[in-house]
Image (cartoon, rainbow, N blue to C red; front, side, top):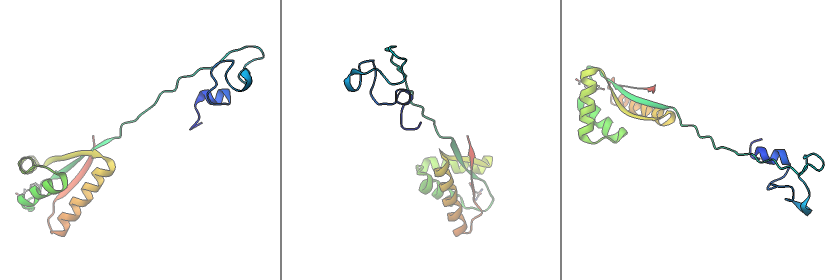
Length: 131
Ligand code: TYC
């Protein structure tokens, strides 16, 4: 019962509402003989919000500060001011948040940053954690 409503399934037809609906004003099939009843159900739309993931940068002693600022500007679309603030946060506290994304986006950012760091031979670590 995926595309048909529960009401359709019960009535065996679409659009029948009352005893005179449908061909020739016949009663709904499945109603008791002469009962003249109709089944009306309400369907509710269910939406699920996706789980969100924080993407984090970890501090190390070797990655240049300008490189980290570049990562934050280019991969996370931060302004220079925000990028510098986050870089100092990571440098001081050991960890800092680059952004919050759905799983696939977060995973892609982590891979992109790690590939970029490796390509430039910096030990920068980027990880994700479920919120
Ligand atoms: N601690 C690094 C340095 O002094 C800078 C740095 C900041 C490295 C943030 C990584 O995620 C990082 N050059």
